[in-house]
Length: 332
Image (cartoon, rainbow, N blue to C red):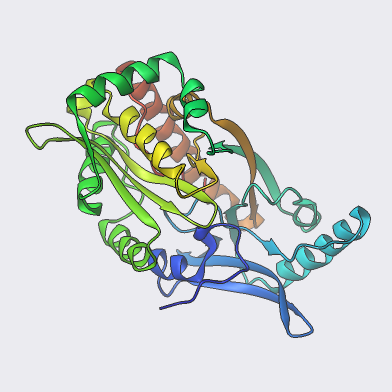
């Protein structure tokens, strides 16, 4: 079993996580001072048609640099960040393109800009303080509260189902919306085993009296935060309000184990609307990229096709009143 490491902001950057979602493909760049690791940048290497891309693996929302926190004055801290990031960049393996979403705690990407990288701002949604469930309930939108109340009269929230039940629902949503599946069943099973071995995952499902699963969601947590990783609501049963019930129940349970709850996005409009309705705060993070000139046309065409597919799926979700499959937006 790969040990937990302190050089990570989130579970997604842990070595055990990477071994589950990208076995044999991941690596890490390290900077040491006096025998101690002071900076780390994980990466996953993929090759296709002679093009090498360093990117983040599926089901891995945040994937950027970790720097040893400095207690120095502000100017010295920025200088230290510059030096460490510059060294991390210089030590990266050769690549034609780089894609990664930095954790929200990384607010300085300027050394990457100086090294020729670009960045765009993306958003996750987060409940920062889980100390008072009643206050959290008061912050939930009226429509969502109504959905939760209605669904709780018809459905039971269970914790005895597994990852296969979540995958069945998730695949139904992707199929209905004409979206390609962004991660394999085998990957989800590897990740499930790794999370179970560490006691950091939970599966919540809303089930009716006929044993039909209306909605199911897969959650992971670390010492401070519960993350909503992937799942969804059965398109044929979505009017029951089950998805709202599952998410609210997850928040309520997270109040017992975590300080915060992260919805993990999304930049998809209908998903953003759903997350925001729970009273969550919009939290920005940087998506950082660099593409060598000779591969820009090919990658630009691929990105444009992906954006068009997402836009079409979002339009279908809006027409159907769906919140969409929950998982990830992808590396872009």
